[in-house]
Amino acid sequence: MNAIETSDLSKLYAPGVGLDRLNLQVAAGEIFGFIGPNGAGKTTAIRTLMGFLRPSGGSGRVLGHDVWQERVKVHARVGYLPGEVHLPDQHTARELMQRSCTLRGGASIAYGLEVARRLDLRLDARLRTLSKGNRQKVGLTLALMHRPELLVLDEPTDGLDPLVQETVLELLREAGSEGRAVFLSSHVLSEIEQVAGRVGIIRRGELIRVEGVQALKASLPQQVTLQFARTPVVNLAALQGMSAGVTEGLAFRGWWRGSPDRLIQALASESLTSLSLTPSTLEAAFLDEYRNKPVQGTVEHVA
Ligand SMILES: Nc1ncnc2c1ncn2[C@@H]1O[C@H](COP(=O)(O)OP(=O)(O)OP(=O)(O)O)[C@@H](O)[C@H]1O
Image (cartoon, rainbow, N blue to C red; front, side, top):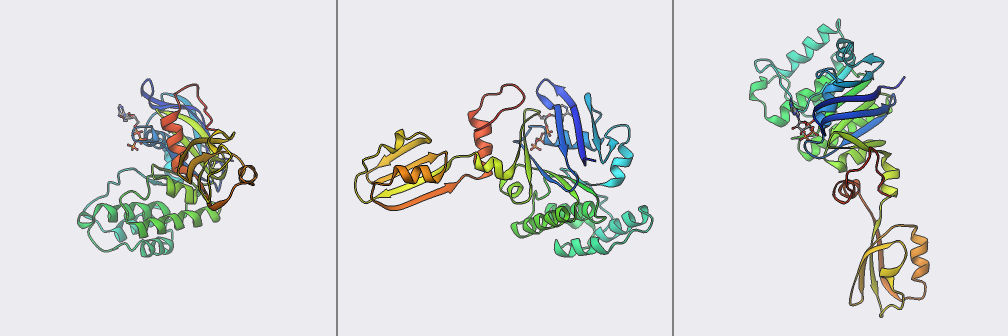
């Protein structure tokens, strides 16, 4: 059974605003990253999957339960972190954790305490006295502490310092290696790249691309930087696979799409003092998808 399965799941506020016909499967144990710019529909998708918003069309199942009809079961089984964490201010993190264990019939608090320690969370401070980042840590601890089969996390590292962000990613990787699924949204692509196996890109409410992180990266051009010892004979900018080539004296910069072999063969008779090929990041994929492509159809491909 898939952890998440949707068929044309929609929550539209207006045409192109909200979530438009989401078709997605996230397997058990998979870490799936959901990326898109502000207002793309990430939070709407997550809140619809969690049964906090009533779908305007289509259907969805989370851990086998209908996202709307069986939302209470979904809430009981999923570790959820909302985009904005609202907590009862008069309590402490420890009190909320203990209450959560009681509600689960005396579940163990041990892993919750470990998560809190690793996140460097002050367990006995009144929540009203905590900073935004520390409140985020409380939300994360509550989401993770029962080792749920599925974590649904809206921007989990938002507002955290880099060290804590790294710990969060580590905790998510551990959840994945224990066979638990993670669905996380972010616009920080570098972090999605570090944990997710697959990525979905959402734009104006539509999921426009779903791809393995490695495949997505492999489909991207690499930045080429060359320094020649003498003026080259080959016209590099005209090579098939090269784009945006610029020559400045004995230096050349451009974008290469293809195997390094073919580039090196083309340079065989040249005299080089340096050569570098830098793979694109997911950031580059994202910018490509957003800036260079017109909206058309439901699925687009970069390559
Ligand atoms: N209750 C609402 N009524 C009308 N429009 C809404 C409502 N909630 C969200 N929207 C609109 O739906 C679109 C998607 O919003 P959503 O919050 O899902 O985006 P997001 O991808 O999570 O953005 P961000 O990265 O800024 O959090 C936006 O244009 C937003 O203005």
